[in-house]
Length: 342
Ligand code: FUB
Image 1 (cartoon, rainbow, N blue to C red):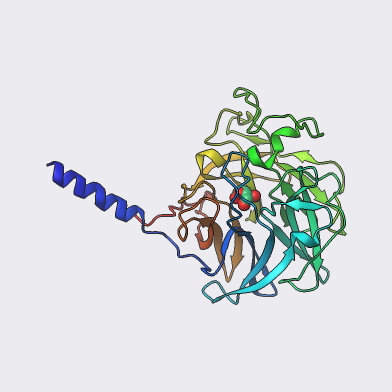
Image 2: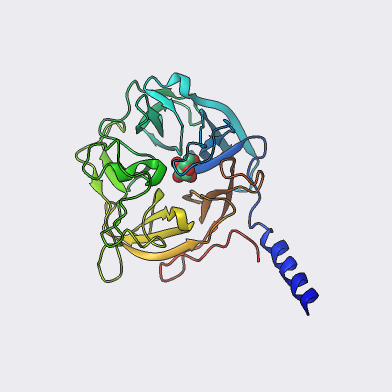
């Protein structure tokens, strides 16, 4: 009986190690893939993970990335090309370290790369860099975007051409230190530690037509349950942690994000790009590794999610990007994705 049981659990282990998708690129470590279709081609803007020898902590200091590479694919099944260094921390006048999850956008002949980095005072800000080429090289502006803070920018351009930046992340992303709109240097390392109060909100700001300045104040993205009540700080299975993304499907706005320490990807739906959004569920189960971070695109009539895990290294700070199909059910819900083939 015992023997049989242990065989069974061994088999379970083997099955759990079968991944849904293979890494898109094996020559460098990549994470936080923000994918876009520009001119019919797929471009991926990931973090470029390296082992800088920094010990692991809750502040994420082991994520010590120094540059960005852009990846491209001619189509979703196509070969992945690494276009080399697109932007290096040494060429960003205001940035000191930790080039975390970037995003990109295109408008009027210019490609914009948006990225978080710690400034000389170790405060995360969000920068912009421009290029006439989707794969760079990108030239960073001299200062971060005025009024920006925290990390994980995601830029969404609506059908009416209005552009919005979603940003923020708690714990190492420092969003918990911006409750009063100014930085609390001695604030919490994790969250507000107020389980019964509304959770910390992701932020959204409309971008000016120049794509490099906020147009008006930074707003809080309201996330409510089906009864219209705010999701609470103690609700770690549902509250926003980091890694926001926006996509529009059949006229409705899908705000998607990571729940961080509970490792899910979750979604909430609204009728406006700035919310409020009603929590609708999880749509991806935990991957191998502490984080995943995603983006969603539509190409050739299908929807895809780009994400990462640690299949290649088994190490939390050395990740690899992947892609799989995303399915919207007829009722508008998202089909659950299991990153392991079971
Ligand atoms: O890659 C560094 C950070 O880890 C990202 O900014 C977060 O979203 C998480 O993936």
